Image: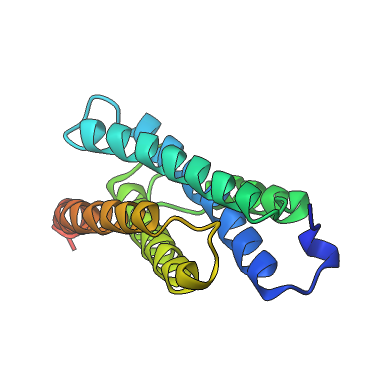
Length: 166
């Protein structure tokens, strides 16, 4: 296995950066799911968090096939960054607010947009690298597109709820 931190291989760097991003996204999706249990957003966010975890597993399997190791430093930084992001002011003294939900949905939109770009970029490489499964990448891209469409609907809904009094 190549260690990305010691390897200037562009594919390794690209994959480990996306893997770190998937760590951030997975932690954010879990937190957003947990904060919204029992709300109108709860079921959607529970499904989304599960799918994001599955997508991260798919990325890890692809990385293994390509003999690229996860970068533990990047993963730790992403994990820590997500935890630090929880400390931002959200318009309430303590607890979760409608603005928190809105910002988290927007961050998830950004993350899923990046994930979709990853699957599409790997699809470009697939004809020259037999370790990449074009059909799998198509399925992953289609799922990311569905996630993105649904997230944008939820984000607009959250914006109306959070900003109505502005």
